[in-house]
Length: 135
Length: 397
Image (cartoon, rainbow over all chains, first blue to last red):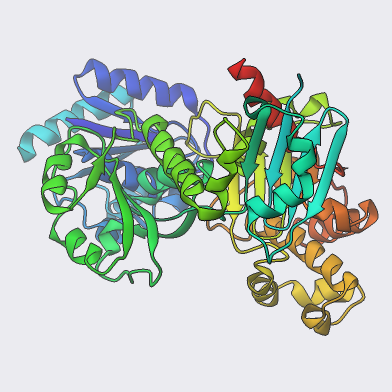
């Protein structure tokens, strides 16, 4: 399966980005890594150009909150495939926030899976389970 | 024996010998060859055809329409390659909006189709053919996913298929398209009635001047006091070109060349004066700028030396404005990091250093909110193109 990944917004957490890339490849995914400092539109454009199955966005300093609100709009704008899976993970809030507030918020933005302060491998296990269930 | 270098501009001929550079104002009642022979015939007789090198910016360049899948990849990569090949982009169309897009009214020299990495299929469909039926074009080239090439070739007459410009890692691979566009440009120059006669005096390929200037940029510090990152603004009679260090751009394009260029076909001060004035009048800063220069709007209608100097200053302002963050149409340069601006072309014959400095101060203060401006270098002898030509002659010998 093809995965587009990268770090959204003005966020330069390159180590985390590299770890995600390596972990995805180790699990057999074909990875298109856009790196750090990536805009939401660039993510969507990469999904279109590669016909990717999964978009996995990471964010470590709460940048995602401002950058990911237009996901639904861009999805409809580009007429993306219905079965593309949208995933976001990392530290998704500025300051303190609990899962019960964060997860519904990002779901309302259009993400299928939301991992707030969840270990990388746990998140990827969950992603693989989700992919199997959807198949 | 030394070389003779000739630049055929839309307004001046520039002729460079070992003894220095001479400029000759063109006689527009004569064709280029007759005019050049009339003015410089004696000089030519001192050189063998093999030692005469010519470049020309008098043909104005080719036009293109680009149809691509996304802004961030296919359109961005194709635009970058087209600009660097000296092609003027008339319009770009996002494929998913092609139903709403309006076909350009003018004849397009080359249409570029692009989209998708290799391995994906069915990117393009019937909508494309429907749109293309309303476009008048001379050439059409496809540089997208391999899997759609056959389908498109079967449905678009004389479609040229080249390698995909988007690699499997979503990087740009511009080699084949750049070569194709450069060859088209060359063929256009050679095919121009006025230019093709020039082969009577040279045995060498005639290149476009923007191409030659771009080649000279890595050598520029040999002749000029230039600090990187820099831009070269070439304001001529028909076009205004800007050549810039790629250090000034933040994008996802990984390219081999350290310098890119943009050609603004309609921002010249002589042949495209009307479109320059139109662009100036539609700029949000124009009235402040005219007040800053102590003139009124009426100066734009005048035919005087002062009016020409104002137009030159306007074109410097407009070209910087068009690459600034206020005008995110094509390329945004981080002008706040700029160290040197080299001004070349007809502009150095008209504007003083102080006038150029004054307009830069206005731009930096008003648009960027900065008080410090980059160092300005005036190429009074228009020597930059000779660097590129000498580079060309050296690489051949």
